[in-house]
Image 1 (cartoon, rainbow, N blue to C red):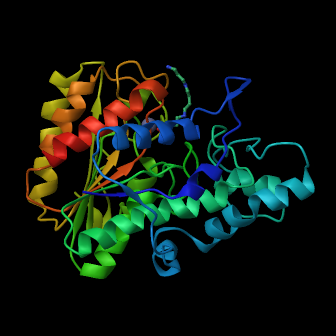
Image 2 (tube, protein in one colour):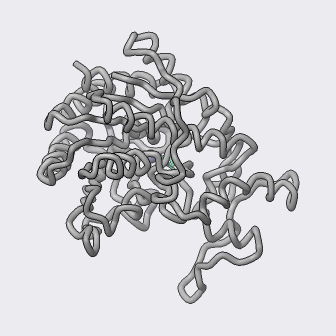
Image 3 (cartoon, helix red, strand yellow):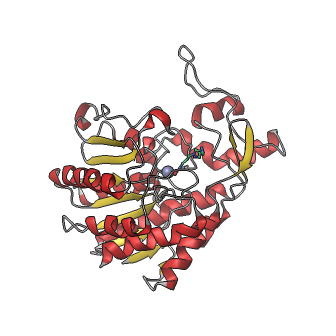
Length: 342
Ligand code: SP5
Ligand code: ZN
């Protein structure tokens, strides 16, 4: 199993997020990825490699708009120059009748591109984001060279970011980048299975009308959970992608006994499309004590979950998404990888 993680990813410092009228410490801290890396080293699962190539612009530009890429690259510098000492959070949402467009105002551009107030941007954010995407791209290159399994310790995460928007602690969609690279470089299909507690609204949106990438997501029902406005069962894809999007919301904290049959359903659906690789959006915020999520899963459940992805005999690229209980994330992720690699 090959493991990818870049030193520069820690340059993304999440100072604060703004929730329910209060500024709180950002939940996506670099302590998460340090804890995961430490536990993987302690268990001797493997050595982390720095990604040896930057994700090519040809792939970034297929997944995201030039507008979003340029905005993210320049946001910190432009915001600091215009509003020193404040933080770039959108100040409104778009209501029906308003036209979603890019105006000359930086504050309005932020409303256009960013959909929540949980996703802080600082000095090192863009460099860290590019390297996180490069860690995902390295997984595709490893799979192309015949490696069966890989793990990309991506932070910032990616699955809430779409073609032309960001949010949910995510900037560039790492799993989508790995999938796009696979499709472009092999000319074959792949499937993304997203087991994060939250619906991956960005990944869904990027591939919604495309047939080459099947997307299945298990997540807490969005009716009462972030991101609220996507992740419902009747979102099945459109156009050429009709039938290639599968949402499996989980209504309650049913634990592994509820998660397992749902995951088997997602996996069987994915395999029925004859993909040549699987990409896993691995969020461990389904762990029962997670401070943001929590779906009743224990550490043992993650080992069983990893083992399920051996079905299909395909290359599997594991991409990190969420998981916020710093003292448990290392155990959750490493058990998943041990289950996969057994
Ligand atoms: C990648 C990822 O997992 N992003 C998740 C972003 C969720 N942000 C929502 C923050 C709201 C926190 N509410 C805490 C509820 C405690 N039960
Ligand atoms: Zn999540």
